[in-house]
Length: 227
Ligand SMILES: [Zn+2]
Image (cartoon, rainbow, N blue to C red):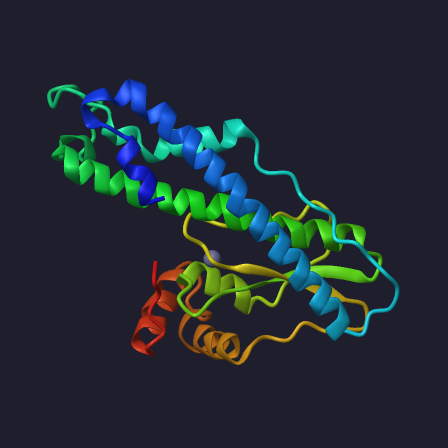
């Protein structure tokens, strides 16, 4: 993503932003396929570890529609376009110098690309669970640096069994979906059990203010979110 940044030439946005979008789309397709392949390997390994019998081939998922990728990238770069400061529609970000706007757009675009890529891996797990008769559902896991919102979802220990259940991810989210097979119960990791303890003690009793309390308590206990 950083290497592609130089495709955007500030004095020629109209001509160069579409070229950049094409290049990022190719990158998302390439790494998305890798994310999907890694997820399939991971699914196979989890199946073996759970001693599931019978063969199963993890289906490959399609990359996101071109339009979805384009819309996300146009959103990430929207503040690059000039607007007169007196225009009521001009945003705070648009009043910044061009190099700052480029930096902000790059940061947003990286997070967008990361989501588009990892969603393909997460989608592969969900699709495999849907089709594998030995799977009962999937659960969420969060990395150590995950945000308070994602950690809160993990502590709910939910196993999603409905076909319609979708993985709710945000830009820059590194959370994963783990398959749960027949005869297995979903267990939280040691770290997630600690988040659960913090949630119950400091957040759960405060209805209406739980996420904010949880975020503060995580920070106070050294579980600082990375985003
Ligand atoms: Zn997350």
